[in-house]
Length: 351
Image 1 (cartoon, rainbow, N blue to C red):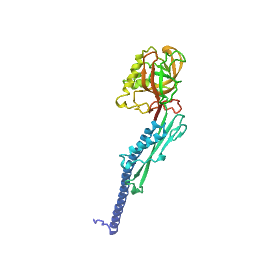
Image 2 (tube, one colour):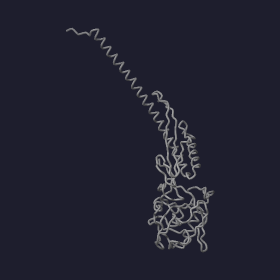
Image 3 (tube, one colour):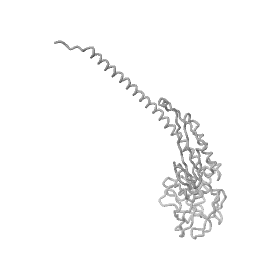
């Protein structure tokens, strides 16, 4: 039997087919390699963009938060915001943040704040927009050379609708003038609408682990549960506390003054203080509602921050000397842009 031999034309076609397949494979490999390299390049650049985004956001957040407690004085707030940007750039390297003067904006009461909305009559806000110019590492192969990452932070400072108070009321009729010395006179008792004196004591809620004296002294530090129980709000009604001897309240307050006058607090004054200084007590300013003795009721109108200077427990006139101060609580309680609190403000990031 004779074998069939391939013709010359068949061999030629077969060779062409192999060559075509080989050429197609090379083309596909080249395309796939370009795609893989592009993906690797974009992965590297996307990672760098994410780092730049985080740096820009961190700087914006830090700047807005640094300025927030100072918003009562816009020039100080803007300067503090700028200082925070500079501090964040110290070791930023290629991810250094840029922030022009127009990127830091102060908003006064009644303004409409982007990302938040309208401010009440006692609220202020600041927005900080940051930028990180970034050169692409591999993106140039795809025609991409550079980009700029932008981020923004919004911080609002507004009267606090709630605060962890000391168990003490001050009559809301007491003039609230920042920094002026006050001699608060102790009321004879919570019996009448026109009580002689302008301060006295409140009962603490039931179920607290701390004693009344410990709450007044603020030491040892209250547990989170006790702090929550002592957090009151505008329009809450509180009960008076009677039957206290002078030592029950004079000693805790004197201990506060002593602790707040030494160590890290040694140089503090009423207008330049560490916010954790124990000489600062947060108190409700109240109106008398009714009742007598331990049944006397007081409705909270607003809150005040009082700087303790002296306790007079001798003689017939019991008094507390000090000054009302401006005080801001970072991120605490209600952010109430319409509240009428005069002394205690809350500030936090809102966008």
